[in-house]
Length: 302
Image 1 (cartoon, rainbow, N blue to C red):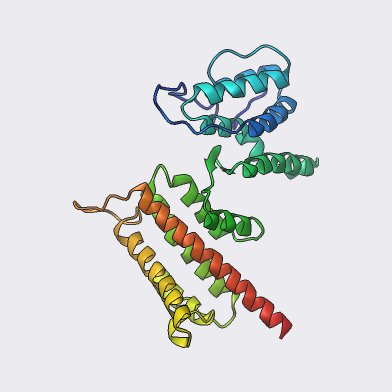
Image 2 (image 1 turned 90 degrees about the vertical axis):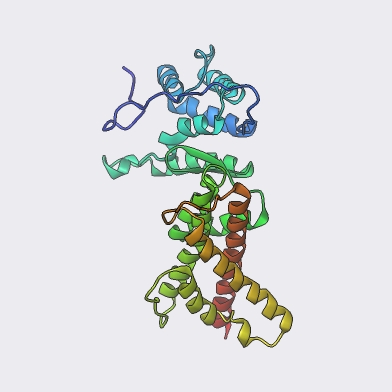
C-alpha cells in the first residue's frame, strides 16, 4: 500500500496545472548540483511507487523514467527543468514534506530529529550555494544577487530574529510577482527591527503609534544616528540620507503598497520600484544591526 504523501487531514493535493512549458517564456531553472542533492535524498526517502505518486502530484511531466530510484529521480528532475514553465515550484513541492517534517519524537517518543536536521541542512546548503532559498509551503525562490540582501540573509540566519526573517522572506518571494507586497515588506522589516530594538533595550518606550516614522525616531536617537548631533558634515549628509530613506519607505507603504485600499488613481508599482525599496531597506537594516552590535561590544569592553 502506498504511504500518503500529503497531510492526511486535507487529502491529496491537486496536480499542478500548466506545468508544460510554452515557447518563448523565460524560465528560472534549478541548478544541476541542487537537483543532484534532491535526487539523492528523495531516492532514499521514498519507494518507487511513492516517488511515482509524488512526482505526478507535483506536476512533473512525462511517465516515470526507468532505472534505480536515484536514476529515476535524477532523470525526472532533469525533465522538470527542461519541460516545465516553473521548475522552482515543482521542485519546491517535491521537497516540501521533507523540509517541513515534524520529528517523530514530538508524537511517538522516537528520535529522528537529528536526521531531519542533517538532511534539510544539506538541501538548504545546496540551495544557498546557488542563490536559492526555501520557504514554507513548497516555495523556492532566488535570493537577490545584490550585496545588501545576501549580507542581511547571512545575518538573519545566524540570529533569532523571527519577525525580520519573515519580512525578508516575504520581500524576496514577492518581488517579481507582487511588487506592491514586496514594497510593503521593505517597510515592515525596518518596523520589525525598530520594535525588536526597543523591546530589547530597557528604558525605551514603544511609541503610541507603532509605524515606521515614530519607531525610527526612538531608535535613531538611542543609536546616536541623529544628524543634528554630529559635527562632521559628511556624516551628517549620510545619516540625513538614511532618514530620507525611512521617510520614503514609510510614505511608499501608505501610498503605493498593498497595505491600504487604493483609489481610482492608484500608483502602479513596478518591479524596479519594489527592488529599489527592498535593497534600500536591506542596506539600512544591515547598517542598523551592525551599529547595534558595535554599541553592545563597546559597552562590554568599557
